[in-house]
Every structure is written in structure tokens, then in C-alpha cells.
Image (cartoon, rainbow, N blue to C red; front, side, top):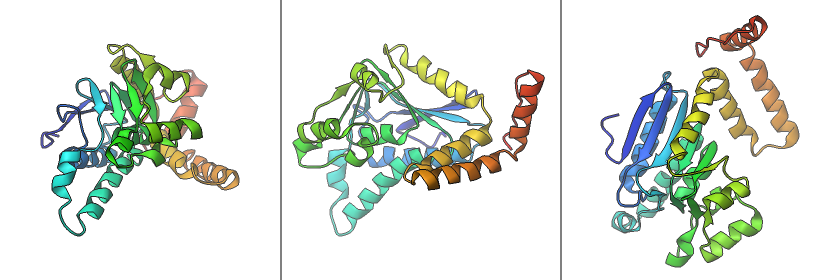
Length: 258
């Protein structure tokens, strides 16, 4: 993806590593927003990619909205609505990416950065990482609805109303992230999880993520019925039959993605 300027994409061993690179703090510029959406949409249709890692270049994951750029883009009627729509779709591009996304939180993830993290599937953090909603200090609101998927009622409101940041070790203690590592250990930890995903049937992981997204807001009865229906569909795939045969023959399965 050589046409991207603020997002680095490296694909190896069925894993696409996306590194936000918008110095100095990886604020969500218009360019980065659009490039993330474009890259994730492309990856959704790339058979060679089975898992994604999303991280930031430097000491910050994403410092939130690009306030300077925001002011330059919102000058006339309709500009704010268009900007808001683009931003929403960037987060949905992460959540709706057909391939599971592992967020490797290398530093501060603030506002829009929190929404990116919450839109990802599996989270790991460096001990230098933190999640925060500092918009209260600049007269705005941040990704509170996204953050509600990660934090309790009281903690979320403390973050939104005071700007309190939750550090990596506390994120792990609260169960928000799978692991809190040294800065050097962050990418190896993320790669280990992504590799485990990539070793599974891409049909199962793709349909599994889609199912998890759908049933998240359904009732218990409707959600489980949908899951049962999807299980029946997955069970008819070649990969499912190969998985069952490999289990019976006590060997590693060879998946074809169909």
C-alpha cells in the first residue's frame, strides 16, 4: 500500500501490521482517518491477511482528534456533519474489518484513540500506555460511547468528567487489556496473539468476528439463536471438515479459507 502517507502497512505471515505515523503524536488527521478506513477495507478483501495489528509510531498511540485540522476543515454549512461522518466510519472500519484486529497500545490513546482501541477485538498494552478522555478540558466530548464497552459506569464518568487517564498496569488489573508488557515486549505479545488467530481457519475467524459483532447488542435468546445459525453455516465449510478430520487423525489442519 505505497499510496498511504500517514499509515505504514507491513504484511507478513498472514498478519498485516498497521502503524499510525502522523508526527508528532499521531493525532487523527483527515489523512490518517481516511487512510485507516481505506487500508482496513482493502484488508477485509485480501485473502493473504488473516489478522491485523494496529499500533502507533513513537511514544503515542493516538492523541485524539486533530484540533487544528478540524478547525481548518469545518468552515461552512455541512462541514461538521461530513467530518463527524468520516470519523465515525473510521472507527467502524476497525470494528467491521473482516479480519480480527489486535490493538497494540504503545502509549497514550486519547479521545479518538480510545474509540480505536474499543473498536478493536483484542487489546494489549505497554506499561507506558494510557487511555483517557481529555475533551472536557477543551470544551468537547470524546469517544465515551466506545469507552463504555471497556470501563465500568463510575470509571468511565470519572474519565469523561475529570480527564483522568488509566495507565497500562491498571488497564490490565481491570481486565481491559490482555497483557501489560514492557515497551520492548509489546509487539512480540501482539504478534503472538495475531499469529494464533492466523493459524485458525480464516473462514471461522472471519465469520466468528462477524457473529460477535452482531450478537453484542441482541438479547440472550436472539443472540444465541443467531450464533447457532452461524455455527451451522460454518460447519458446512471445507475448513470445518478439515479441522474435524485433522483432529481425528491427530495432525495439524491445513486450511484453505473456504
